[in-house]
Image (cartoon, rainbow, N blue to C red; front, side, top):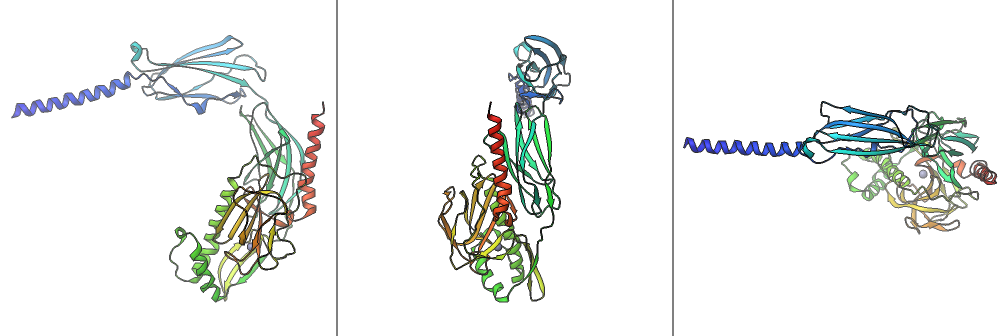
Length: 458
Ligand SMILES: [Zn+2]
């Protein structure tokens, strides 16, 4: 019995050792050469920033050799042995010992070997060749035209020429948010519409252009800040029968996943006004960020928006609304659009060309259309009775897109209209005003066109 047990135990040990040896030798005899971490391979270099090329290997890195070659001539040739068998290394590229002109190519040949015992214990060797274009010049930024000022809550239009041999990214920061720019007329001309959202106390505009070699140009945009726009606070008294009637009807229409139990009607109201509002705005923001940036409709013929013909204003942009039941404050919210009303089920006519980004029933906004006009600008039409366009349809000036209604959170038939600049709700007074459109959108675009025309003359 004891002997048998001994045999079983020894066989077990032999098996374990075998498994161990096989596992171990599969590592020490692995045939995979060190692999280049592709994200670390650049195409351009400013000869300033440290460039490191990352490699990884299962059995560990043993040594590497780096040759620097320019114009077929070897400038340096160095070999490094690594003793602690790291599974990954970052190899710094030695800077060339001679002065190189912009636009010339410098070549790096890297040979890197692992600790594997394969190939008669010489290991696996990877050979990588990198050709880096020398670029020490940061992007060259020339202002073309710009709005004179930006109002708190408002928008501004800017145009720049940005030149670089390998431009990677151009954007504008307002100190808090970032805005994309759009190519206009040719490869080097960029137009941007930026915003100073109401949520931001401060505004400072800076264009940041980066190239593939890591050179960065920052250009401050001297927009005058207009902080004299008045925004109002209004107190809205809610009637008891609204709480018990309309609220339950609205709650029955929203996505069940947002629902939970409520203690009383006041809790329901706050939930609707705050959480469902935020949920709706998330949907709108997502639709805005899905937009196709290559589409650009806005041109010199761009017209002021007319949300609803023959209507009167019943609610302004930026109103800070506090809701009361009797004397009790029950909720608050900022109104990020305007409310206009005319007759019941009034026709809504498109005042600018667009494509449809979103057609949906939202909890608070009711039946909603979101249209994209180009250069990051979209418009939202809410509480519609019905609409006659579908997502990705083209909309043309003069086309009837829907009828006003009182769907969602609406106290009567009206249109809630808003403008968004890259997902930020902005002041409507500007986008509805011929003078503002002329002095900002039309003027910047026409100056940009003249810049382009005078520049292309040989
Ligand atoms: Zn409204």
